[in-house]
Image (cartoon, rainbow, N blue to C red; front, side, top):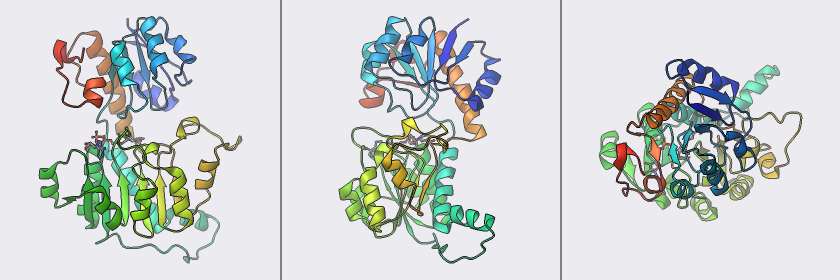
Length: 351
Ligand code: NAD
């Protein structure tokens, strides 16, 4: 029986993995601890490792895994910016992921953030609980006919654009390094350059991956170009926004609203309870003081359907690997970073 070690495991996901594993028959062992250089030694004796978004798969960890004879790591996530793909490729470790577990979960959370911030539902909830039924200070705006800029039109961005266009009748401007023009024509949305998005959008929502090109895509220069009062939504990755610049622009009123499901330095805090400990991160603490900022802790993916798909696909990825089947969900240095350069020989494996 193949033995798989899970890092960063939470009780709510174990339930789904144990249920689906009845059909796969692996030995699954769960650790709550995150993966890093020190904890990588715990994987000795395992056949495979399963990681989540805050687990660090850097060169040292990968070399340690290689030393233990582990040659497969499955991410139970879509994003893979926490993996040194080059090191994985050089050490012949296959990295698998779940590319499309439920784009609806993240897209719908994005819309929830837009509506909550605009209509100040988070403020109204607290007010009425305190028996304060006044509505001053809760003024919103109609989304109808306003302009939304969607950066990244993959699985999630496309659903967000569709809801904003067909659900709210907004003007939708899109930017993607690999645009899908026929999709845009059908939906009657337009691809434009980034500057046009910054200058014209009332709402800017981020749905591209974090990589060298997209790091701080919302920079000082980008904020300078934006409309006064713009709403920024980030359900993608924290590093897409220069948070210090965001705070500066919240303070001067350029940014009217920010909905953040992710944060640059989230690894230490998100998914953990700090209610009795407090924060040492002054930037996150400052963000939480703004009445027009809504922070959720990387929960956009968190629906029943998403957890079912994550559990099933992750276990299927391991099964395909161990049974020498075609690997549909492998990412490697070539597939992930140097696109269209993968020959996928050897049963669909990158190497
Ligand atoms: P996807 O791969 O389907 O789409 C990403 C899109 O971004 C693609 O169309 C790609 O061409 C585009 N892109 C790549 N580089 C770009 C660049 N430099 N500039 C503009 N566009 C670029 O991914 P997806 O499933 O839509 O997910 C998007 C992101 O959402 C993921 O990368 C992940 O970071 C994030 N995510 C967050 C959660 C959460 O719970 N908050 C859950 C899942 C995914």
